[in-house]
Amino acid sequence: MPKKSTKMSGLQCLATENVWFDKQRYDDAEKCFYEGANGTVTKEREFNAILQDIAKSRQNILQSLNGSSSHGGGDQELVSRMKGMELENQTLHKVVEEMRAALQKLELRVASLEKSPAGVTCTKAAPVKAAPVKVENGDDDDSDIDLFGSDDDEEAERIKQERLDAYAAKKSKKPALIAKSSILLDVKPWDDETDMGKLEECVRSVQMDGLLWGASKLVPVGYGIKKLQINCVVEDDKVGTDILEEELTKFEDYIQSIDVAAFNKI
Image (cartoon, rainbow, N blue to C red; front, side, top):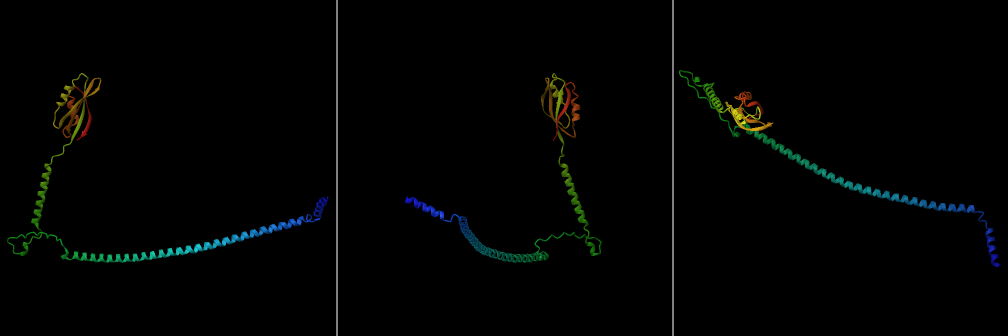
């Protein structure tokens, strides 16, 4: 029983507390507390971010200063190289000027040597003067000098004529080029009973100046008929194809027709 009374007394105490009636006030206080705590953390974070940005800016400034110093060293090297090139250019200009002066002196010396007769190593042969022709019965001494050289002109004309005659004689001795042609003839018989041996004898019996018969053969035409194919060489100025056909067609007992199979200039 005493335990029960103690328990009831505790509940009575809690019931008499007014905390439950002021709950809204306590909730507001808790909210303000947490908002203040969060605001402090946010401010600290913002402050840390600002510090980091400042550190980065300092680092960038240092890097830019180092870079400018390195570029300054490169510029100094470039300036020194340019100065060296200018000195080399001046030296080259001096060398070129000296070479020009030496060349001018050499040209002047060559010109003076060409003008002076002593500097000429090769002299032209003096022209041969004609011997004076003495005139009989001449009282004036000036008549002994031939100013026009008529004898020399006659001698030169005679030599020229002799050379022309010798050239003409030499040219006349050369054999003239004779134009020749190679002709391949197809000689056709009447039928397969024609004696081809006799036909060839008739063809070769035609002889004339500028005509030379060559090789021959029998070529089958058809139905047992063969034609005679014979080659000949002729001189164009003496023998033509018309003359050959006219002479060969006289053997009308053996030869039906004649055709030119090939014609080539030699």
